[in-house]
Image 1 (tube, rainbow, N blue to C red):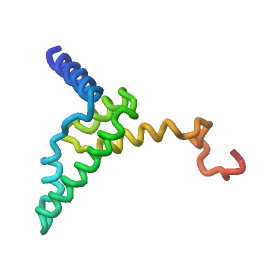
Image 2 (image 1 turned 30 degrees about the vertical axis):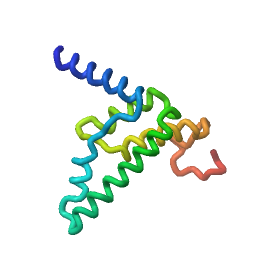
Image 3 (image 1 turned 90 degrees about the vertical axis):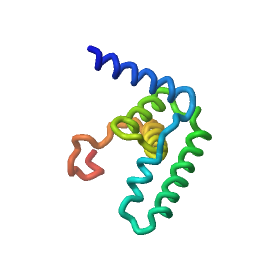
Image 4 (image 1 turned 60 degrees about the vertical axis):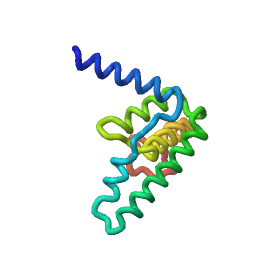
Length: 119
C-alpha cells in the first residue's frame, strides 16, 4: 500500500510540474553516457548538451501549445527509470500532437496484402 501511495504521489507531482512549465531534466547522465567511449569525449558531450539545450528552447517556446495531459504523460514516460532528455520529451509531445492531425478514416488495419484499389 505504501509503494502504491508513493507511485501515486510521484505521478501527481510530475503532472503538476509538467503543467506549470518546462520541467527541469538533468541531461548530464544521458550526455555522459552518449559520450562514453568516444575518442572526442568533450566534443561529443558538449554537442549533446547543445542539442539538449536547443530542444529545451523549442519546448519553452511551444510549451503552452501542447495539451496539459500530453505534457504530463510525456514527462512521466521520458523520465521513468531514467533521468530523461529534452529531446525525448520534445519527440513525445510532437508525436502526440501530430498523431491527432492524422485523418480519422478506417485505416488499413486487417487489410493485409490486399491491393489498395480493393479497399
